[in-house]
Length: 629
Image 1 (tube, rainbow, N blue to C red):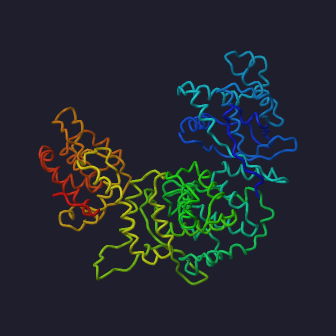
Image 2: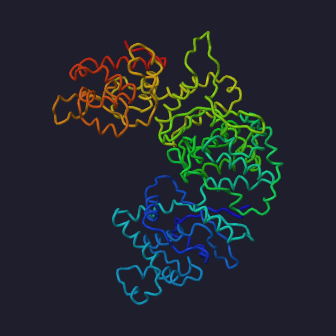
Image 3: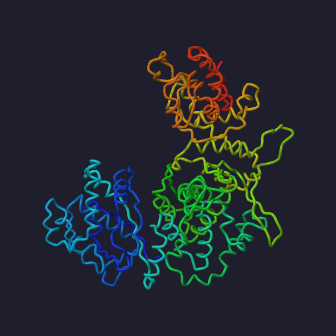
């Protein structure tokens, strides 16, 4: 287990740096400082640009030696860069050997005499060229050039430095440091906040409970594919049944009783994190292998959603406070107060009970997430992928079971209500509408809402209502727009969800005679994130008349940004004639506007207003608001 986790300030309010408080030594088995422009400039940008109360910079894995010096196992490149950065922005006089390299005299000479070595005079270089470590001087030069070129305000930067947090993780005594470093070096990355959170949650558990916790955490951590497939077959059969399609949380103790002969010999890293998180780009993982399913959010954001579900479902409301904005940089800051202060039924929940309850919640939410929330699915060599809403099934005899995927079940066709639309298709369209409207993972609150609804076992007995619940989420901002904007003239500030939800409503009407020829059935939501004026704000070369009412709702649609540049400032008729094929694949409102356009003047003087009334009435009707007469 981890010995100690301590948040460090790089620079405190009394202007003391972390190097004035403790000494750090880089052991011989580590390489010399090797950060280049890219890493150093990114560090400077990260510190200079954040606007939150504080900023989590990363982790520092250390071993406390008997002489009180911290031996740096992982994080030395960042730590050295911070030393160079602090030396550049201020005069902190921390003395010698606050950061040193074992058996590397040139590095130590350079660090101890850095202020003298990097001033405008070059005497020190010339006098002792054999003692200078050029990579450190080069790093200091990169910092100087960056501040000069970008005109960075040192005072503002120092103010931000005081809000930067670095987590120092101390390994327990008698850790095999060489083996530990070897594993860290192969993995090639710093511990993330979710790694530290995992360690914190595992701390109060006994050995067997840690085995179960780690098994579930590691399975949920891989956001590609379906969580069942991240368990070994014997665990999968127990936890998800013979068909692998249901979750039996009451069998969780099976994971605790499972023997693990390696637990006693595991290093700290083995306990915290078995493997690096896979990163995916357009259907491939970091090694170039094809993946079939990819999540719409990463694991850190998923943890934030799960915490909100857990708190709402399992804890007393007055015992916790969670920021509305999902901020992956504040994962620990969000979790720790709830771990420390959470209550259930008026009583404080112990850290052990919190960890055991949360890991079960995590597994349940991941199972629900995979089954009922959209993914990106990649088939064959298609790198674009498609929205997918499928559940895992199994076929074959017991000894030769094979996973396959089919549309998620949401209930049978209802003859009485003439429910003619496939519920999976509708749910998929609604969720993809939400996904492309709220592009930042910080504001994907719809995921929390859907998970919380699904978390209630009673709701999953009436899945036919899931569609209506999802649509109500999509309606929220549309209703606010309709109620608060009587003139409907927001132009490019029109909420994207309003235009995307309107496209969903047009898709629902796809069999109507007036829309059939536009082939709405082939429509899919894409990242159309630029609001476009059909009649332009600035007519091209003033070749046609300017229109003062271009911001009205009827003249707007949502398109890809690259199309926006191509549309430029052409007239409606010119756009229709020049970019017909592009329009045929665009948003549904765009297709309707193009079809209605016969003449520029007529669009401006009559057709736009008629189209606007029809579209607003479609929205009003769906939102149960009065129809415009």
